[in-house]
Length: 634
Image (cartoon, rainbow, N blue to C red):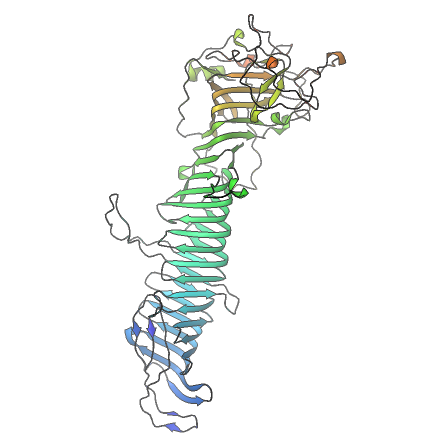
C-alpha cells in the first residue's frame, strides 16, 4: 500500500521569517508514504485528523528547500489507514519524510510500530528502527526487533520486499511467517481440490539478517535458527520457497526433530509440516537417533505426520565430471552392536520404532563388541566378528519376517540350542561322517578376497557364546532410548555371496580371554541367517553351496623347532592346499552343541575315500605371515 502526495489540513503557521502564513487550508506535498505487503492500491490522500495536536510549522532552508514540521501528528488516510507519531518532518525537495517517536501505522488487519521511521518517495522505500514490530492479525505473521527496510509494491516493483537486520541495540530480528493455505491441491486424477482450510504451522526465524519477498519466500543469513512445530533447524544461511515446497539450509546445517538429529553441509526440507515430508542432508551427512548412528554422503529422512518413518543413505552420483571425495563417502550405520557399511542403507522405523535395516551393495556388518577375545597374534581379519554379502539385513523383534532363499538340497542349519533349532525347521542332526576334512595348514578364502591360514578344523560349530553380544558405549552419540521401546535384534541375514566369521572361546579349560587366542568359525553360502535371542546366537542357517571351517588354536605345549612349518612371505592360495569344491556340507543338518569343538587332538580325521583337490574358484591374494599365527604349527 503506497500513501503518496499527502494532502493535509493545517492550522495557520509561521513562515521562515517568523511571520504567520495567512493560510487556513494548506496542501503539503510532503512525499509521505507508508506501505504494506498485501496492499497494492495507492492511498491518494492523508489528512490531519482530530486525534492529534497537529502543530504545524513550515520553514524554507537554503540548499534544503521547504521543510514542514508537525507535532503530535495523526493522519487519517484513504482505505481506513491511520498513522500516529510524536512528530513528523517532511523534506519536500528530497522526497523524504521522517516519523519520530511512538510511530504506528495501522490498517484493518496489520500494524507496524517503531521508535522512528523514514520514507523515500522516489524509491518507494520505508525504513524503521527501534523496537520494531510488525503484526499481521489476519494470518498471525509477525516481525520483531531489528532494523527494517521495506521496498513497497509500486508501478516499477511488482512484489513488495522487506529486509530486517540486527538493530543498533544489537538485538537480532525474529520473523514468524505463516504459510498461506494451499490452493493448488488436486485429486488423484488431477482435478482441483478446495483450498486447505487447516491452519498451517508457522516458521519462527531468527537470524542476523532476514529477507522476505511477497508472502511465500524468505532467506535468512548468519547464525540462522528456524523453528516449526517439533522441528528446529540451524544453518549459516537458509532459503524458503512456498511454491517449491522447500526449505534449504546451507553450511553447518542441522535439523533436530522428534527422536533424531541430522547434520550436513546442505539440508533440504520438502513439504515440511505436511502429512508426508522429507529431510535430505548432503555431504558429510550424519544422523543421530535413539537406536541408530548413520553417516553417508547423502541421508534422506522420510517423515509421516512429523514422525520419523524411514531413513535412506547413499553416495552422491555426480551429474558430470569427476565426483568429489565427499560425494563418495559410503554409508555406515551403528545399530546396537553392529556397524554396517554398504553402497546404500535403508532403515525402516514406522512410528519411530526400528523394524529393519537393509544394507545393499557389497554389504558388511562388523562387531567389535568382543574385543576382549583379541590377542596380539590375531591377524587383522580375525579381530572382529563379521558377516557380509551382496545384501545384509538386520531384523528387529516384532517386524515381519524376511522369506528365506530356497535352494532345495543345498542348505545346512546349525544351532547351539538343537531342540529349539530343530523345532523351528524340522531338520535332523548331521552325522560325524558329514564333517569336512581340512589339512593341518590350509588357506581358505575369507573377507575382502584375502586368505586366512587354518588348521585342525571341523565344520561350523556354534557355542553358547553370542557372536555379537556386548553393546559398545554409544551414549555420547545417541539420544536416551525410550525404556518402553523393545528394539532388540531378532535376526541378521546376509544374501548373495554370503560369508561370516566370528570368534569364540576354544575347547580348552586353560583358556583365558585376551591372553590366549580364541577359536575362529568361518562359513560361506548364498544366504546366512543368524537368529538371536537375549543377545545370544540361537541358531544359524546357511543356504546354497555351503562351505565352512572351525579353527581351534593349537595347544600351548612347547613344539620342537624341527616341527615348525616355515611359511614364506609369498604364501598364497596354492591349489594343492585349498579346500576342494566337492567338500561341501551335505544338504541339511544340525550340529549339536556337544559337537561344537574337535576332539582332544584338535581335529577330525579325514572321511574315508576323500582327498583334497584344487579349488579353482578361490580368488584374491593372501595374508602375509610375518609373525606367529595361532592356528598354524611353527
